[in-house]
Image (cartoon, rainbow over all chains, first blue to last red; front, side, top):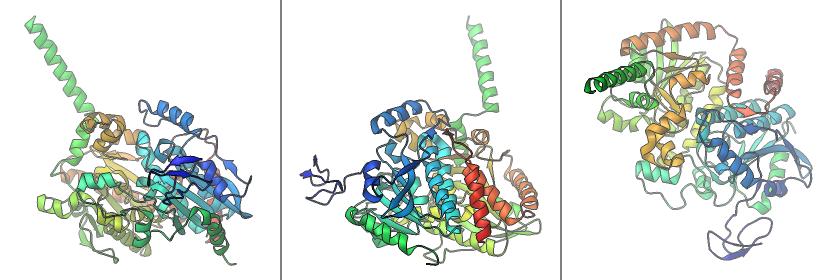
Length: 252
Length: 300
């Protein structure tokens, strides 16, 4: 597959990792590609696939927007959860997709992430969440804000069961997702070059008028500031997750 | 003919003012919630408490004047107070970033909440912020992490938490001190995921349509009560009258909540948070939650 790299503008021939061979730029992966990246072949079984968004604040045009995005992305909403094995180890996977309404977190995304975390709490299997989100889904008003509290409270329960929560932050992870479960992992990994932050660069420049330092809010910046444990290349991700799963078993 | 038009005009005026008396527009509520001179957290704390001592600092980086915290005595009971502070005059407004907290504010709130838990002291939060501070420094020191941690810790904190939205309830910055057992709003307070201006510029692609956005966002106390996000609306009078109403609720609720077994309190809080959202085809969501509760109970 040949694509033009948005970073170096070169013609890049991409393999399944979708990393530009010329400059190392990370192209976005679809949910299916992410599953293939970390889960053992054929091991992924989707959970809560029947969940669909309502229109809780009766916002004009939201239902059409949902239908458009469902058609365009072949996804039901901006997240998919399920069980899988990673090199033979059982795990719960949650994967967000920026392709569906900017990966925004509404009731369905919040519900799925919560269910994934609670399934981990019940089974004791580690929970691995991949984020890609512009933040809360404004079209659901206050209900989207409350998903932040919902996912964070699930993470609190998971902690009580001593079950690990691993985060993989991908480009971009911002707003209400950053300010909830994305920052609550026992270990937080990031893909190289991903934008990770709360307020978007435009908001900061627009509201406060501050100039942004070079590399601001990139994974490397967050690593330096202490909010990310490690930046992991796609090629190394499965091996890294296997290591983390093996080293986060209580009493073993 | 002129006369008739005058009559019709007068009638319309009456109808308009009548409508306004019943339900002012959402935008009118937004303006009221932001109005300079509106009583803030410190005013209410002083009116509600017999005595109050402010406590400063997050023990990590600094003290955020945009977040007030401390211990007060309400009707003989020690209570930890946490609240946003916009400042009472221009000089204070600037010092407090107009009520927009940095990570230090949320970390101070967290420290005081953990301190309250240690000494079984209930917590009262007053929300009045346009949102968390969107600045370079706030990002560098992890504003997202600070809010996220508060959401997590407050959701399982072993003391009663009462939350009052007294002015602007802006987004994650409000929610960062907004997870609790009971949530109340002053009548003209607002609570939303983004400002109407932000909603207008992003979704309506025109920042000047904020008035329209406010209506569409359903951010008034009446809407939030309808949505069952808040427990009740508190009517507003003079600062003293409103403070007295808040005080009565604090006394009433804490009498009930402080008598509850702590694990019941926390389970009820989590169950309430867990249930918020509109999702089609969702069945029996509480079942796994009850199983998790049973499991955490045996682990304790």
